[in-house]
Length: 189
Image (cartoon, rainbow, N blue to C red; front, side, top):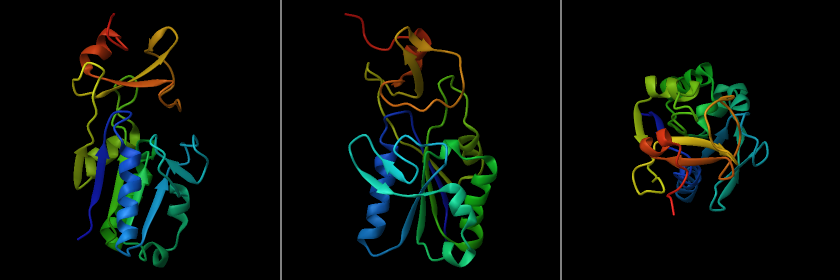
């Protein structure tokens, strides 16, 4: 029985690496898995998923997945979606239809919250309807569990702005809730 999975974590928790490894694992045992991402994530090119540790693979866009005929979708043993937080509510519902009506598992990876600790629309919908929800953990500079995605610039933590601002280690850091509240990007001294 297929399921809709949501693996969420703060920035730099290896979500993309996990997605790429899951794709590899399916391929290694002779199964057909499809990598997918939303059209919002263009950092590594339109049809490429790349992790910070250098793993990468080609992918399709979620809007392209939505246009595939049913018989093509049914040929996959699994669909893996990276950066699922950027999906719309309707796109997440479509992913659940793939699970429910085509019996194809869908594994989604993404952030739970933005730089203001607000849920992303895709994450909110996944939390509401996913069969399995698991955290991919990472740590703050202090060693505590990091759950906050702090956006920063040369002046420190950014508290206002657009929900979507594509960036990497040059713009975001994972922090524990305490250091997020205090605005501490690193230890003193």
